[in-house]
Each structure stands twice: as structure tokens, then as C-alpha cells.
Image (cartoon, rainbow, N blue to C red; front, side, top):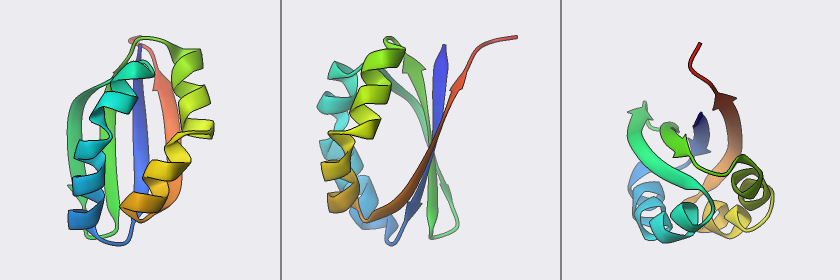
Amino acid sequence: MQMLINYTISDYAKFKSAFDADNEDRRNNGLSLLQLWREDGSSAWALFDLHDAKKARDYLDGAAGAFNSQAGVSAVSAHTLETA
């Protein structure tokens, strides 16, 4: 199972710095980064291997708020995906 997250951001450099610093928290909450993409200057996409869907959702709904604030994230859209 994987999770694809779209982040609406204000500044990619600020986002990337905070994103890298948040790696351990994400991993501790069931998300292992597979790929990160940048789309224009206002959007970033991250594909994660999802080890614990409930833990990851709880993290995104709670503790990730601190990351979002530090990273300049104004919106997050997360999608859980399974291989068909």
C-alpha cells in the first residue's frame, strides 16, 4: 500500500528544509518516502510506502500540523493507493 500526498506550499526551499527535518517523524508514523516531486513553485507531491495506514492518518490529522506550519504548507491532500 502507498500514500500519495499533495502539498500546497508558499516556498519550495522552506518546504524542502522542513520536509527533510520531518523524515524521522514520518517514518515513526508509518510513512517511508519513495519519491518527492516539485510542481511549479506552489505544489509538491510525495509518494510514500505506507506501513501503518491508521498511524499515518492519525499523524496527518494531528502532529503533522506542526510540520505544515513550519514548512509553509497551506493545504494537504492525501490519497491511499493499492496496486490493482
